[in-house]
Image 1 (cartoon, rainbow, N blue to C red):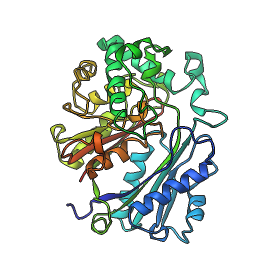
Image 2: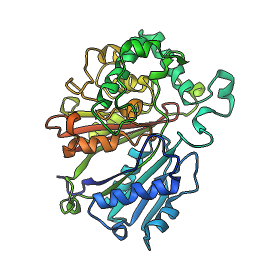
Image 3: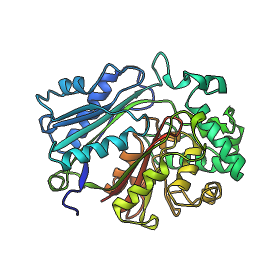
Image 4: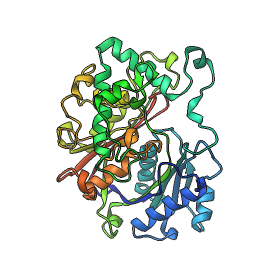
Length: 376
């Protein structure tokens, strides 16, 4: 273990799906308290808090969470928002703060409340993009997906392969919103078009819920009750949010983010045992696999065929069901799942002897990207 390597030692969950009786503030507190308990700590052990605000109710912030937890003083307190890329970015900031002696134990947290909120902010966009039909995240990603299809011949059936695989994984996860709701490729193909070429089942769920994590130094991690999961590689890559201003629609920040993560981890793709890839849509999976270097540009469609991403495939991916079939919490599905896989706590969906996992987060119109490579 590197002397400066940090570890994720606590995970916190809340109910998820539709939670009309929970406020955003209550969900933040529930996730945070559970993460701190999972780490074997007390609230006063936390000296850093990083949050991404809930889009439907931004009134719960870093300082209000500090108050609710009863923490008298913090060395780091901030809101970090790179949209869906935020979880991975937060944990990188937490690691840097710990490595530089600013903090000892950092709490990262987020709450989503789109399923039962009066209005869902992801449905509408502002600015000149409206003239091009960009009425929300799905429409923007669909524009990129259509360009990918035109350039490389990616088919709807290949997108469907991703959706069906992750739905199968969700049948092994009783916490998943789509648990008990299997799906076939025919179901995928017959679902309505949201924004061509994306069908309904190409798009992530709408959910309520919260997640949190505690990060500490490698030395302190050895005294925590759960098996520590170490951050061995990390990276970020961010391109322009406005699709119309980009030089290309098929490149995102994933290439830069992933390259830095592999370089800092000092490993190769063949060393990865399990993947947690950001899946706002099935297209996100295909283009990330290309940019991260698991296959060549334009080969993502054929790459996902024949069960390659399934639990018994070459690169088991999104074993919880992901945002397509477990729950949508702005990227907070992947990190907890990969940590749980490396802890060996995933039951029927456990990847045997998983030692190293890669997890990505992506935000906006696939503009912002973070990558973590984790090891047990």
